[in-house]
Image 1 (cartoon, rainbow, N blue to C red):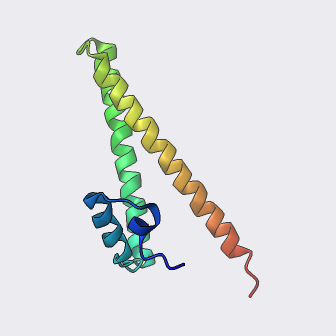
Image 2 (cartoon, rainbow, N blue to C red):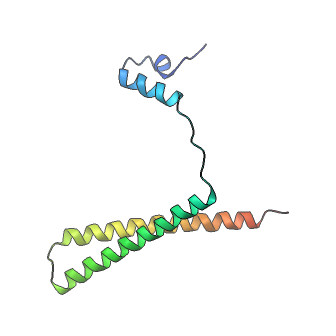
Image 3 (cartoon, rainbow, N blue to C red):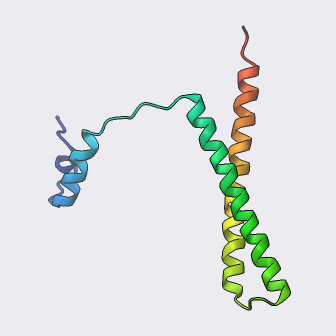
Length: 107
């Protein structure tokens, strides 16, 4: 039984799905960047996290001083900062885990 594509397998007649199946089967994998690019992206993530934390602190100060009564902006800044910090901590944990695994390799 030869399966020519997802449209034959599921008997799908939608042009959108046929087009997506064609594009996915002809997609190429782009080569991975070098370590410097990866490290640069990590540093950019840290800078972005620091920016969100700074904006959160500014919104808290504005609200505490009575300069703004808009709690939506405060909640939004807190949510962005918390999410970004959680993501950064997860990346850090993965870096540490990878480092420990590399250090355990026998030479």
